[in-house]
Image (tube, rainbow, N blue to C red; front, side, top):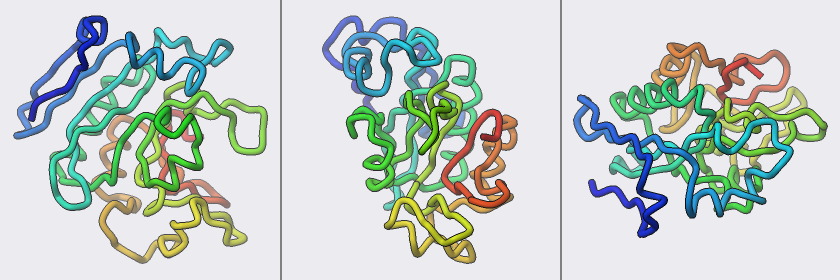
Length: 214
């Protein structure tokens, strides 16, 4: 697979490129610079966010899509967590866990709802926890949402987000891309001491993994 780094020379420097022993798995970790920095500024990141953009890292990695094809996706996380997340995606790739798509939240103008509606796997987004003035763990680059439709947010009253995730509120289902306690995806994050929103009491956020469990 050929990696596309763009024509901008600034986008091409400071790239940490690694070819893994897992056949076909490739990953890049790089600073947020050039066109990526321009796209993010004022959208997913802005002055006043709880983490500086220089402390974030762009990860481009291979993954298996829902058709069983190798794809390349991008996600932004905190620099401190980047090594852990590379190991997570290496494990997911090895286990052939299916991911619908993985694009930066900036493609959705920073809208968490639009990203979820598109079943997009995403990481950093400088936003509050819904309905509060408390920073989400996504605002620190320490949370990732995986396949939101197959792994929706579900309250005890039956509210489901995103709406297309309604059929998957039934966790007895075993469709591709779903996450269950103890499965490959769960273990990949648990090995890095990341916690799953499906273990929350009350409302369950089945798509959500975070460093501190919130």
